[in-house]
Length: 435
RNA sequence: GGAGGGGUGGCAGAGCGGCCGAAUGCGAAGCUCUUGAAAAGCUUUGGGUUAAUAGCCCCGUGGGUUCAAAUCCCACCCCCUCCGCCA
Image (cartoon, rainbow, N blue to C red; front, top):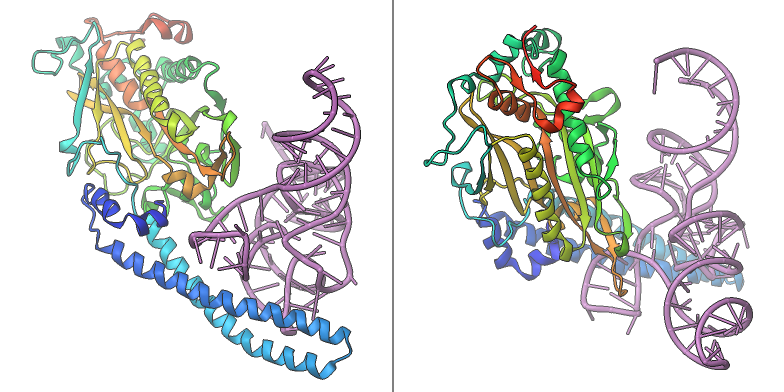
């Protein structure tokens, strides 16, 4: 969440920043009214408390001195004040809860240099990279060969490596089954990406079911409750991304600055209900309820954040390049930025069979928005008060769409799939062909 | 799932219902001494709110009892041990 003090002290600047997201900023004024009322109520309560404490001390002292009547009188006065204390406390608590609830659903302030815009349509492609087997045309879009123009759902059936019907039988639509070399290709992708991060990023295997508090820390709750799978009986949530458990690794902790940046990487399944997205770009692997992803994550000082952001982006791009996929880097505009993010670059791989740019990675800088929710701080080296860390994360990659772009891009005239060089040892095949 | 034990500051570990935001030890920082280091001595050393080194809040979490709760009561969470079950 945003620092309430910043909203108080730099109200107009905060409003202007939120307005860039297309937010109705009148709610900020209401929030500030509640905030002022909260502090007033807390002040009243604290005064009464101080008085009660003072009287209580007197009761003890008077009793010890044998002045029973005096002690009784002081106790009686304190008792009366107790009613005020309870009332003021309830009042302050209710107001504080109201302020917190409002704060939890207010999105992060976009970075200065995030491009302005109202929607996805205003996102700004900033860079292209083209694969030798799928060069970009003059018009900025690849023009695939005929053998590359087959969508992955057809390729999957052709080669017996993707079985959507069986997936639907087991779990419903948007739950794919990978088979044979298709499954091995997926596993190879995961292993390859994980291994690429080497010693810079500590490999983590977190739980995929987490507590409510863990989901709140990243901003996935309370606002996006309909997107998440919930296990009612145990009150646990299925994570939509490894970002969720990784961000909470340091929850309620104070890290040493010398430990920053703390960089983590994890492979996990990810679960998304995709409520309301039925029928929209959901064919094949374009949008699924359960998928595999490798994530990069970091806690950093504010000074380190920009460098880490660039490093994550470079690492994600390196994976796509090694896989020989044509992609573009898109700078998300303020209107399309996720709630918690200040700046996000998406990587979109071109899927020639579908004829679409597919979002396969999202690399984001969250400033201290998540750290404030999760209460992750660091102790500055030169001394001074603990400060909130910055969190960053990036996918490297979301695999179903990468898998789709890969099989479409590397489809040969004979219908087989050329396995990218780097995956061959892991797939234990150079070509995936039928039979 | 059953039985028992336990959750206090960076760590370890005390804490008759009032003088406890908390002894003591370790660790860390500063100073003295020293050519330097070690040792020794002295001092400092949790977080939050706030303009504040005022007041208030925080001893797993949430309730309750009381003039007064780290301390008593209730519920929940977590950890440990044993039994059961199990990949």
